[in-house]
Length: 324
Length: 302
Ligand SMILES: Nc1ncnc2c1ncn2[C@@H]1O[C@H](COP(=O)(O)OP(=O)(O)O)[C@@H](O)[C@H]1O
Ligand SMILES: [Mg+2]
Image (cartoon, rainbow over all chains, first blue to last red; front, side, top):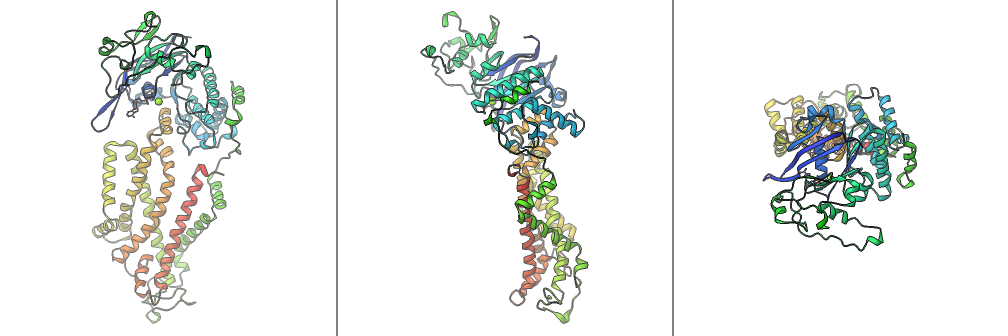
């Protein structure tokens, strides 16, 4: 795997202002992250922890509150929509809900042709249709369905259409925002396999957002664990699954149901305590209210993301030796 | 490319047994409407006949619009006067034909203009939000809060009574309800994932408004339009009744109703004939609207 960095976030913040009193939701706070060219970086965490917000902020779909996103030595987070326009096509997105992400009044042809027409990539209408047919073939939708409407397809097929639209512009990075969580289990693996094949064929880099850790295990090269807008741990998938260093990663992995009966009787970590509200983050570590190992230091000082044996962990007391 | 593998990957349950979808042109859509909804097709023909009769009124009409014939006042329907004559001896059938010109134009044109204005105002207000939304919607609120007839009267009094000013008055009252409906659709549709997908591709704001949001408002707009046409026809007759619509010797359906009102019990056709005409065209617009809505709905395809 090349270590060339495609996109880098530095101390990225995203705050939503809600309600009349200007209450602030800290959806993403102080996130620093590197996405390497050609890899699949998975972003995991429970729902509401800011995964989608982070993904969208990284590709300029949402304006960042503070911090920078570096792409090709430029800070795209500081750009206006107009300045960002030339880079727009390099970063695309696949959405969670294949029922909501396709315009119900457009045919498959028009949906997949929209990116091509927006950038006038094909010239004539016939050439565009040819390109659409090639894209449909690449994602496994038979070409004779060209003039069908989205509701005439099953969920898996619609997600394939969404994938065809995302790759039409030959992007470098695709944010996959829980692309299979709305699909039947039987269809999930087909779509995941398609994503993997497409990644090879089109030299793609994925930021794969998910909360299903078995799906993440299948897809990811590296995993980034998030909790309440903060990064807890970033590590190679195998290392993380073998030995989580952050207590929250351990908790997440423990929550995976295990098929192996010999391992069933292991002791599960039981987590108690309140999840803090994203409007009112604790002063110290975000996870301190629920962490079984939390100390006074955890409650008062926010831990920095630091290197431990080649991985990054934001914890004052990472799970090494004595805590295990 | 790995497409062969991918194709084999599709399981039977991921495959729907649907016929091959051909591209559906406007002509196909119209054919489909005739087949599925004959009532709508008949309505379209009825509307067409009404419009043709209005256009060729001077050729078709056996008598003039305004010439009185005091010797033949209040005649019953006969072969010489198909619908009888009014209290000045004018042929009612001819007056109806001439009156349809104004009534149909008044029904369609201001509704169409207020539709266009309302769609643009609603899209802009809903999509951009902020102060633009505030300004547009407050203006619309003012228009809606004043009774439309009163507003039309004010316009006609200040600008003078003429057909153009009647159009202006009816348009001013018509656009705000359209704008409201379009704005509320826009607000919900702009949060949808398919609009977000379009934004992530880099589709421009105006394209998003007109390619994604507007088509999804069409069903409601058809309903609104079919409601606006009759209400405009009826507003015109109310204004004419109050003496600030069309000038007296000329005819409009509303005016004929008003003039025939006093003879409702002795010569009821004087009043009922234009009422029936209004009813037919209003119903025709409603049925046609239903048919169009179905034919434009992708879910109703085949
Ligand atoms: N448009 C918004 N306005 C206000 N708050 C939002 C908005 N979108 C998301 N949030 C809040 O930000 C937090 C993170 O949301 P999100 O990024 O969707 O999480 P995830 O994708 O991990 O489920 C949540 O607390 C959510 O309520
Ligand atoms: Mg999400």
